[in-house]
Length: 249
Image 1 (cartoon, helix red, strand yellow):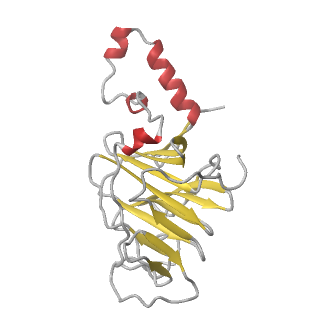
Image 2 (tube, helix red, strand yellow):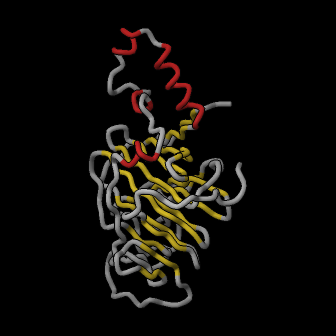
Image 3 (cartoon, helix red, strand yellow):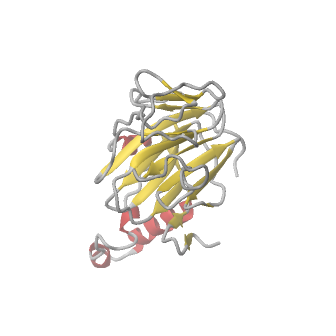
């Protein structure tokens, strides 16, 4: 089975097998050859993949919701760390040019432009999408131009009734294994990757990884279906024991 799939959109989807094989090849290389691997090498980003949640927490960044972007169906907590879809109850948020008017979405306050950043979310109650978007994502379109993952300016992982699918430019990946209630997102600008991890205690599982050429600052982005909730885990350093949602693929 092919471990790497490269498509015209320049996004490379990476499997667990690929990461393991590349890591193995590194140890098999003679010392001199291994030392000559440059930063631009396509395998460089996999030489020290995170093994535990503690490895990821080295890059922890605080993320909060931007109330000026929240759809009228979304209720935000006072600390801007919990969002709940209250449809059909309209929240009557003040009008704002940044607000999503068609999609049940909200962006983060923080815009990342360089470095490595990691944050975690807990999800429950229904279908959700979590990921990143450029600030230019459309706010009023009813179709793919504004939905997270439905366009060329956003990337996400969707969880729905136990299945998980990654989206970018309105194209979806094969199902990813074992979506969890606690998800970690790792944005690595130097390697131009966005990785999604299932989190349980200190154990982590790579669910999906995008590799692409980010050209602008990126905002955390969230789509929330009816009755669903997303909580940003800014305060906890040790999430409660989690049970995978649904069946393994």
